[in-house]
Image (cartoon, rainbow, N blue to C red; front, top):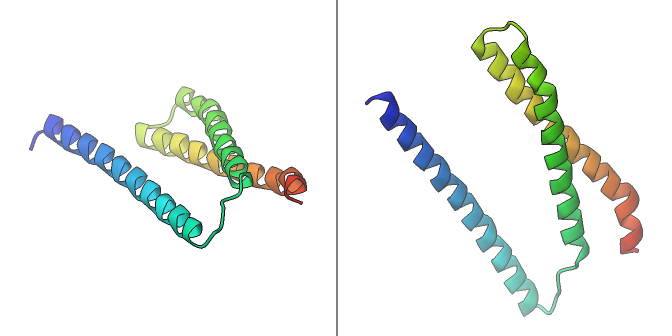
Length: 114
């Protein structure tokens, strides 16, 4: 199998995997909301604000990680080390962004729910 065929197969598998994850999450959310409606419960709107805050924190962290990781491309490392440092920095800052978003939600978001 040549390299082009492998790239096509892995690309298709990647997008199929992403579509499957989105479908599973959407189906799970639908079933939860359906069960809540059958029991007379209603989902609160603060969950949406919290999710958006966490998503924003992750995206800001990933952006900062991309900026910081660009420094590693300027250094004289071999390709594997550079790739590892770049991806590690992006993931690390994405995690920090999620932690900061959670802490901000705990500090400022709880006042809206009381």
